[in-house]
Image (tube, rainbow, N blue to C red; front, side, top):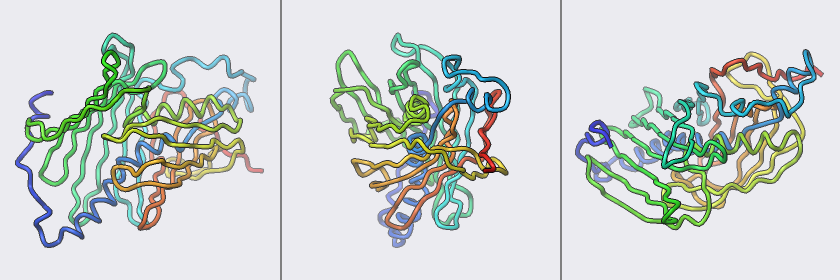
Length: 310
């Protein structure tokens, strides 16, 4: 851990304030962006980029897809989260490169989650650093530096496959405030790796209906997310483009209560090509629906699958 990560300020007990309930509710709305970022990938994917091009240019088959056509180095996706009519924040994903972690080839992934200015009592910012196995996209390491108001909290999740355990640790101001060991009984997605794992599974569906059960750890929770990738295409509108995109819909269910109280059924849409770019997601909450949609994307040589006019 570097010096910046250890430079947290003194913890402030906001629970003693008279407006605790107001702050907690508004914070929860904004904070759920974090889990929404994990769910976006789960809710969005796939057919093939080459099939999309083939309709107008060349009949390229699925087999010609290059390995990095899904997880593309330097790809950057930005999403915007909305609650009712209020835009509450942004989520930005980056693929930084390939490297080695614990003697394995991994992708270095990063995500930024930020609340927008002007939301009362809320100042939320978080940075996720994840190493995901380059072949399976299961998580090998995840960290989160989170700023909420004046407080910085640093959390790590380390997957020790030799000792078959997951070590979850939370620190404040350089001091450990909580540490838990969990059994590593299978491979898991965690945090940002979940997004890319789901993109891979959706591309594998290749336009066929598929049931997917995804193992996931959410802080100290170990569980599954169940999804059905639908085979029928439908148009999907997102902020990033002024025309609808061809998309497949995902319907899913969480087996657990997430970090910010998210649970139950959800739905989403994914680009109907081999890039499996996440487009849009809807997550049900007690207060209503949160919508997360693609606002901007930087991806080399990507031709968005424009929906048919028919």
